[in-house]
Length: 113
Image (cartoon, rainbow, N blue to C red; front, top):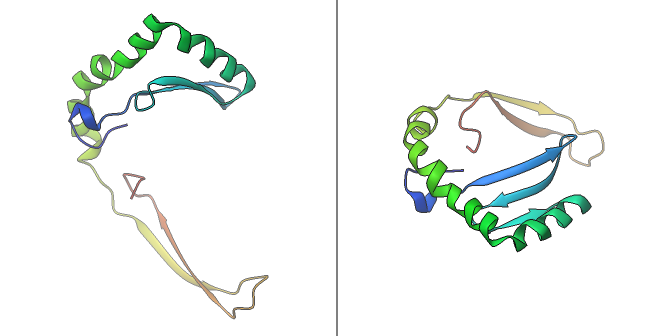
């Protein structure tokens, strides 16, 4: 996760999934493994006890992200796509209001806008 080319602004996140459910994550801003399921919590506790593994995970931000962020920045953060906007009036099904204005935006990038 990044919003500039500076290492201090980069966050290294590694998530592990099983059956489309995230069960374990390492986040460089937290500095430890965090579990989200029973299995993930057990594995996080085990992984966080291994100081060599924890140090290696923490080092990934500088080792993996820093050398590549320049390329990603050029291809992602400098690109944008304007949204397609649709504005419409609708009558809510279960409301005391006679009408509601709905604004929808589609097909824009970056998605955080």
